[in-house]
Length: 416
Image 1 (tube, rainbow, N blue to C red):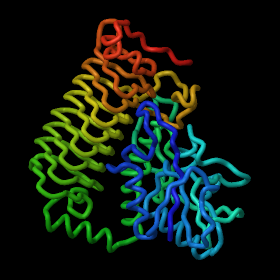
Image 2 (cartoon, rainbow, N blue to C red; image 1 turned 180 degrees about the vertical axis):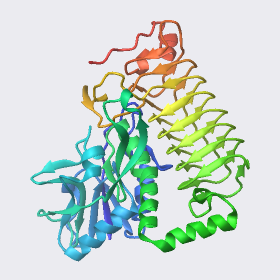
Image 3 (tube, one colour; image 1 turned 90 degrees about the horizontal axis):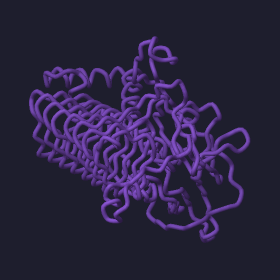
Image 4 (spheres, rainbow, N blue to C red; image 1 turned 45 degrees about the vertical axis):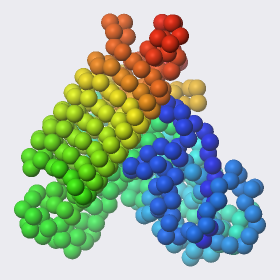
């Protein structure tokens, strides 16, 4: 089979680069897609539109390069498409819980046509054709809770939940989608599949239990659900629970806690740090008592001591100083909205942190409001007048730009 990649050259703020270059589960998206497709395709070509594809009558898969999908989804799609034997495209039912809850906000790649949602992935058994039928896929979502909020603190009573797909698919067109792909459709989906397998397979459960007994570990800490790479230095007092994947040459200090996360190579996690339901890319550094909850760190970044990231996305080569607070809960009972294509749109997230682009340096003592973004290459220093980030911050607003231009920085107010 050959694959044709439709290039999406739109740059995603605040990273200011296309989605294909952003990290998903510790790989650039283009490389993640290539690895997922490797078992099926032997030929590759990039085009700007379907009209550029030649008319050769060969089995062809076409997809847009800002899509996130894993092998569980792809295997099912190709199997069913080959059984159908006709040209088709990915589609979803209007009541697919994962799509309606998390995948259709602030994007145009998954859109309604008639009585289904369609997306930009096509299968052609005999070369590209004009007539394509929708092939309705089921993400097989499972409802998973992540917060239990006291009823007197929220109008959303009891548990706050995600609709986690076990066969994930989404279109990355906004910085919020980097959290969706890495966390809800990434590490969370891995946990949902583990729960499903245990529920439906006594053999799977017994295998995990037997491994835990042999290793004298708690069940979720056994090597059946925690995979650790080579040459790692992990303190005996650290707590690691799965499903978790840890790369090579990783250091984990005393009292650190890692739960249901992906950790890349050459990562240093110092004593007392906590990483929960998060993705930490290669060569990142978390000094003592740094905390990540449902957040994304791209490669070569650092979150200093006593800083807590909740539902945040951090670009590559970025430094976040000590004692910063990224708030994630809207105190006013209104949906959380973020800037998208020049206007505020609902994110579909009941709680949401902020986003910092690539090559940023953020000083200590900042408070960042929910759904605010800081553009790449920004330098920010806290002061009496400027330590609360209540709006998007652009490069022209940074202290670095102000020093170079001699103009005092004033962050631009975006529409409320």
